[in-house]
Image 1 (cartoon, rainbow, N blue to C red):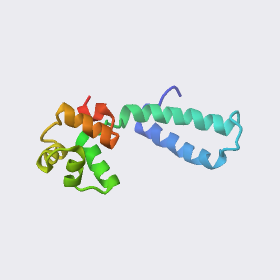
Image 2: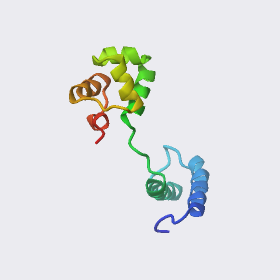
Image 3: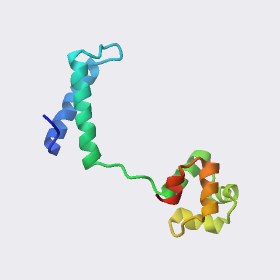
Length: 121
């Protein structure tokens, strides 16, 4: 099998991987037949999922909401940290407004968010 062509094949390969997982441990040699099969099937699954179930880049509002949750911040506290008004932060988090370059720089620096995500590129 050169690639997984449809959902039925995908499900069959996933089932086989489930069977192999208990047979392959960190002590299993890399040239063991089960280990080799597991690696090959995992690569096929990864290729199929990249095509059929791509993971989109997160949007800035999504990342900001996650950062707020992780840091235990309110929108007002986040706005204060970045140095903008609570109203402006609300517009950015709701997706109604994009940050200015200076605000984007502050968001990226102070929250450790990739500049590409902040700038939407």
